[in-house]
Image (tube, rainbow, N blue to C red; front, side):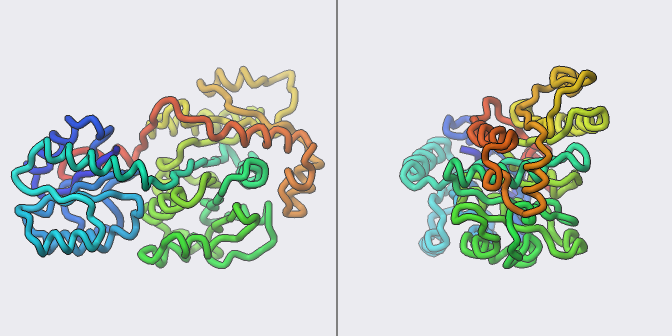
Length: 391
């Protein structure tokens, strides 16, 4: 389990962190020195399984804030730390969904016992945790949106998975046009404006239904609305989506800003899409270096070569040497089927199932869910996961 400890007391947060670090059930500990007051989301990036909230000093300040934030995290288990087992505090905590209460003096065996009970309950009530796949264009015209939308369709149609595609190209996204002619009932910007109300029902009602098990959450209608979408909004939407879908596919576009980094941090796999030409190789190297700076491991970053044709000048092996990373997959060039798919807004797998592109994509649908062999952290995870004052 991944734990987050929140306390305004520097000594106490060190004490909590030391206790948790010595418990086998805890795989990682993030700390935040401060209060939940004014926070629009939990003060940690990346997934958190258990929150330890210090309410020893003043539960009347922290409990209302906890009650406000808990609906945003349906999978989160919360433990509060109190000065004494006050009946009023216990009843209030129980009503808001707190699972465990630990009172002073803080003891390692009390923490361990609480975590054992939490683990036992989670074995029977564990929710779906879908995989998040992020497609990033190394250069304009790479075909990343084409691959993202068609792969998402393939996962739903051929693999019978429940899939959500989120258009993260916030200024000029048009992912829906590749597979549907319907207008969205709501957009990512609409959800951001009403983030406190976002739940599974609202999310599902906001998507374009392409198939009963495949929907698209579109980007803003107006490019100026992109400025209103914050990293915390993406954190909330992606966290929720992965509890409702087997796969969440992110069509990222090319901008790498705070919002994009939040999405990339949440991704299980990142697929940089490029072609086998020198300009793509140059931009691909830059992007891979950026991902390395953000501490994304080699298993998380999985390049895809799109529109592959035999070339006497460049080979896939040359690209791998230039990037310093193995190519995960290749998709052949077949202009007639790709052009027909894009022009008609029909997935290529549906329109031309026997085309070379469709065969490559159907093969890829069976591989994208391969497990991660090495955990990869993220820049925002490290930034907010450090112990310290958190201010």
